[in-house]
Image 1 (tube, rainbow, N blue to C red):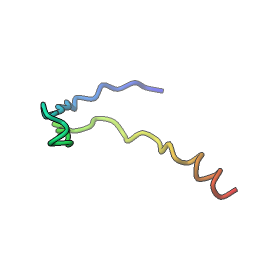
Image 2: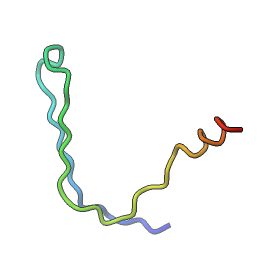
Image 3: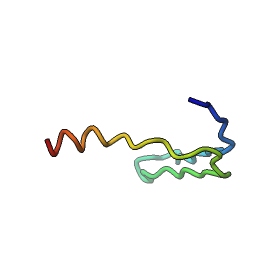
Image 4: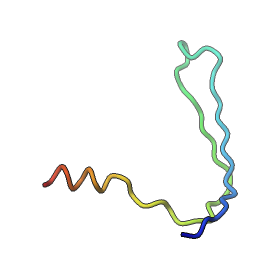
Length: 50
């Protein structure tokens, strides 16, 4: 497996009063320099339809 560095940066904005505003903003900036990871729900699919 070849490990590649991804240059995408993430920022998370969380309100001070999460009871009145229960939302979080996640911002990503950049372009991924790697392929997407393999799916992780395949095993669940096999168990479900066994």
